[in-house]
Length: 249
Image: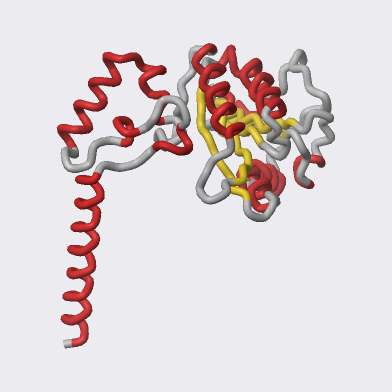
């Protein structure tokens, strides 16, 4: 039985590689079938009822396949490299049930446009309902603009309303940490904090120090954690110096 691996890529403003697909919405679906033998692969075809804006092309040519995967894997670098000087590339990672994937993509695209993020890209793993998206933002003197906080709030509402998760493949970073309690509830949140404290007492989790309202501005570590970090840095520097001295001898 062929094993498909599908990855959607949606670009709201085309880069040169994606414009080649000819889609007015600048979206592409890349599907790879893997089988144990060539005979099984011969029977693979694209479903006739799949609503495509351009004819699907299947190929076994290794060079052509490598070129397509190069486009897919280069989306982040292409968009990040073309961002205006002084802006930061921000990458998020969410997942929703597969039946809700198409609607989530559409609403996420609308959400980005509504908050003024015009040069953004969505890509991911369709068979898992997993989406990555990247947008660019300008931070002045370390401050995040209000629109980024508002966008994050709306994003959380969208994902949780679809029964999704705010993190799929990547770790929960500073932007999403304030929303962990909202996703999992008070009981599981308390368990997470207790486990973190048991495993790492000197450095309480960021979960305990993030404001639930404006994530980009309020995450910090405790004083005990900072002292622990300074001690670790000093110990590491001393060990490096000792190794250098032994090397010279």
